[in-house]
Structure formats: C-alpha cells, structure tokens
Amino acid sequence: EIGSGLVGSEMCIRDSVNSFTDNKAISNAVWANTGVNITLPAGTYVIMGSVHFANAKGGRRAIRFASGSTGLAYTEQIVPVDSNATINSALQCQWIVSPTSQTTYNLQAFQASGGRINMTSSYIKAVRIS
Image (cartoon, rainbow, N blue to C red):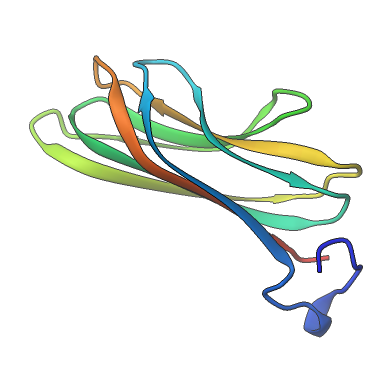
C-alpha cells in the first residue's frame, strides 16, 4: 500500500490512487482546476493526468499539474486545434514527483477556443515507484 515503503518487485497495483470527474465547463483563456486532485504522502510517484474536451473549433487545449500547497504549475502539454475542424480532443501528461511531506496535486485544464467548452471527463492517477 502507499506509505508502506514497498519498492521494486514488492510493489503492486495496490500502490496507486486515482480520482475522476466529468462534465465541467472550462472558460476561455484561463487555467482552471478540473475538479480532480490527488494527495500523496512523502515518496516518489509517477502521476498521470488525462482530460477529454468536447467538440469545439480552433484554439488551443492544454493540461498541467499544479501543487495544491504552492500553486506552482508543472509539466504542461499544449496542442493547437485546427480552426476548420470540430473535434473532440484528449490530452495526457505525466510527471515524476517526490514530495517530502503530504502534498496535493491538482489537474488543471486550459482552452482558447473563443468561448466556453465542456470538459467531458478528467482523470488523475499516481503510482508509487519508491
């Protein structure tokens, strides 16, 4: 389990935690919390995040992790969206973190389509690696 100190071959899928949410409107040109976050005790983890955006033309979509305690942003993925196409878009990002004390990480989303668009789902997962 997380916090048990297990490493290497002693670890298993039990050493992970996750959070999921769906259907949230994201305003234009503003970083917003998706509603998913994960609180991790001291250790080293791989955290993975995924956001699915609803159909929208043009602009950019991006996601990142931000520390709940410091507000600092980490590891962004930004992609342009063709202005002539209406598409669903899904973004993923990963990050290795080593908090020295209990820390909360938020998954944030950004979009620049000229108006509000819906995020149809978002997911964050952490797996302890040491």
